[in-house]
Image 1 (tube, rainbow, N blue to C red):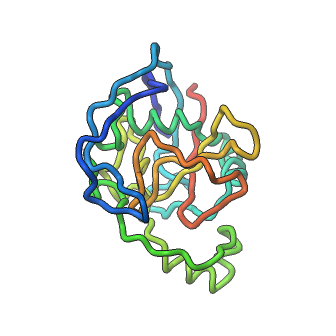
Image 2 (image 1 turned 90 degrees about the vertical axis):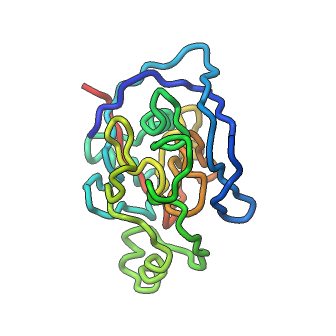
Image 3 (image 1 turned 180 degrees about the vertical axis):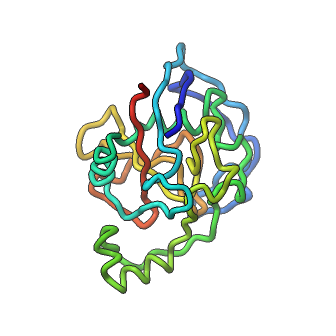
Length: 224
């Protein structure tokens, strides 16, 4: 795991400076370049915790697990003596004290992280990970859509703390500490498709029992 240490800004402002060049799904136009962020909070929050360097199973060179619900991801983390990361922990590990729009900076890149790959429409109702891999039709459809890369395959897609793939590759479950069940689940970081793939935004409409072909996770724990 990597030690993440510093001062987190809970509320920030970061205007878009350049109109999009990368086109996403219908109605989605991610910004190409952002201004330097401004912290709007009166005080910053001290952060000190450990985070998996790679998406689960946290092994460099392995494809990250997907088709996993929020409760199942939480159980995997607990089984490893860890827990799911909170939304703020993910944000800070990705953007750092300078509040970068992306883990690598404020100008969008389709090369540094595994992002902005062509969108392929989903036409199949998937089973969860284990069941899907036992069913040939599900496994074949997953292979048709899948554009994951092995963990750490993009060596420049790394935070200042040494955490990889915080933008792109797979969307990652986090804990929304201000919510109650079944709304505690959030998705951060984006995935391989032409989506936001930024540090701060969070997708909040997926309930805890949801799972998807692009949804994965990593774990955190308190620093000793």
